[in-house]
Amino acid sequence: MITVNILGTGNVAWHLLRFVENHPFLHLQGWYGRKMAFKINHKNIFCDDISYLNEASVTIIAVSDDAIAELSSQLCIENQLVVHTSGSKSMDVLDSKNRKGVFYPLQSFSKNKPVDFSTIPIAIETECEKDVLFLKEFSKLFSTNVIEINSKQRLSLHISAVFANNFVNLMYQKAYQLCQENNMEFEILIPLIQETATKIKTINPVEAQTGPAKRKDLKTIALHQDFLKESNFLEVYNFLTKELL
Amino acid sequence: MITVNILGTGNVAWHLLRFVENHPFLHLQGWYGRKMAFKINHKNIFCDDISYLNEASVTIIAVSDDAIAELSSQLCIENQLVVHTSGSKSMDVLDSKNRKGVFYPLQSFSKNKPVDFSTIPIAIETECEKDVLFLKEFSKLFSTNVIEINSKQRLSLHISAVFANNFVNLMYQKAYQLCQENNMEFEILIPLIQETATKIKTINPVEAQTGPAKRKDLKTIALHQDFLKESNFLEVYNFLTKELL
Image 1: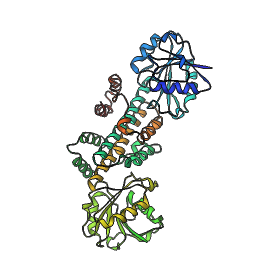
Image 2 (image 1 turned 60 degrees about the horizontal axis):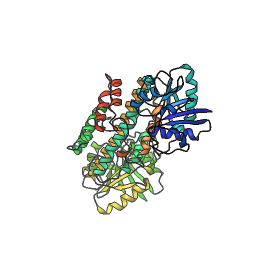
Image 3 (image 1 turned 90 degrees about the horizontal axis):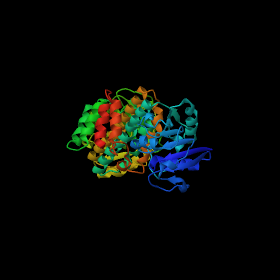
Image 4 (image 1 turned 45 degrees about the vertical axis):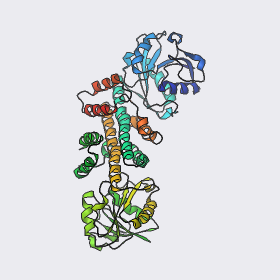
């Protein structure tokens, strides 16, 4: 049996706990948090004292970036595989008394909204060569899409995700607000949004670019700018249009 | 039989011609362009002299924004329903000798890539009250999603589409380039991109916002900025992060 410790009570921890509890190969051995923020099936294994955690095949620290280093140093186990789940933090922030690793699921998790782990890419990294195979096979229990990358690549991947998710959603927000201000339903944009996200599965986004800025249609841009004048949309419109021109 | 004239040889015209040719209620009566840029089934109806166009139930001017006004004035028919397909241009740019209207399909068309018109929202507008019902029913032959909006709303919808499509795709470009520069496949971001686009079907984008800027995680932002320093990504990263903070 593969035994798993999980540290954390946030969204990632919630999804990992659910998965581990329900996988026939995995045994949830310990769960640590400051308080039991939600219920799980095996709630009696919860502890708010980190020294209660025993050795496990893998110990997953799924807490906020800033808490990783300190928690890893407080662990009372030694020479075990201990991984964090952060996109930004280097593997090196983990305490050296255990064998370091990273298990980074590339998805924006919301608590209480089940995800299909099988489609979520997982980026892994290990300090010791001997842990690569274990962590890879462990990750493949979760996902069909497991890649091995180093900390620098992972940080760049995390930044890419900021562009592809956070900033994209900010654009959705702007579109939403514009629709609201002009008495139209945002829903009318949904097919276009879906098509935009689908297109780049088959065409790379450099080739997929369209619109007035791309075709240097300065008259349409001027029409848009005139419509947006004195609104708080104009600055973003101008900045990103300049990027595309 | 409902007769249709189509003016133009661009992407929108191509899709409209295909649709009209294949619909049992519709008869493609005339097609005008400077030259026959592609083949259609009834290619003998093509004309490069606008005076050859006869009266039709609806005449659709599907040309670039700047050419709409002049072409509409060159038409030799009178008191007919003449519509343009532009998102930005006011209905008023059409010549007054005919009854004005707008038929604006909200999608980013690529030639040779068939689209399912039924899911594409169509925004309509008419000058004469008596044309509303006809243009609405005509549009419903194409799409299940027909809305009646005025020229000002349509312009704001077009700008919303710039945010939701053009600027979103620019963000995909940035993510693509970052992946390339760090030897990773862009494909790894596809599930996140799909999830981001799917989420806003059920949660409005203001609530769906996540990421370091949203949670005011200045340490992660500093890590990102340090990674991007001296790159051409930094300015966009900083600008949009500031928008979200």
